[in-house]
Image (cartoon, rainbow, N blue to C red; front, side, top):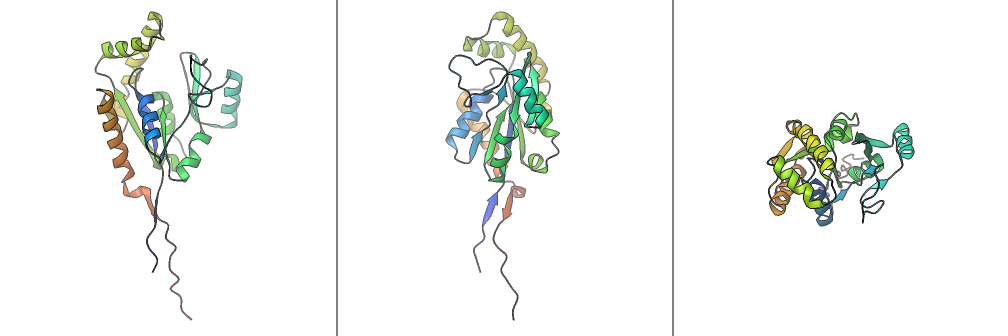
Length: 214
């Protein structure tokens, strides 16, 4: 009799939260420290910031190219935020899930809603959604200001967006209030560890023995 052999299906971990919540940092750190996880690089029509690299930080597309991808059905989800398009290419996700690798995405609440509404059963079965809250607007402002990339006018827009996004926290399976980097990472890692152990994610791939006899 052969040994049992199991294969786990991949998680699709969708992480949302206001600017400064650390969602991108958490996704990147986990994917870099765990060989079974990858970070899905989003596509965007916004211009690269200093130091950002195409294909690493984002797939930078012009608006015509992005809209052509939408028409072809290339995107798992997409949304327009502050006049710029953001989205996740299906090619960044589906192959990894089938191979048992976890895919981490940091996207806004509009994109998360589209992923939840996906008709693909593989997406629906893989989905784990997490919202990261901040204790209050003062903390959001402090974290965004610390980046040094926002004008006061842009900061005001970010705060208004954060207010609107944070109303959606209860739509997510998991939500936690951000503390410090290490505590947040420990919480994030524990959520994914538990989700990896859900029994429905395992399948027995052992070949069934041939019980027929002459």
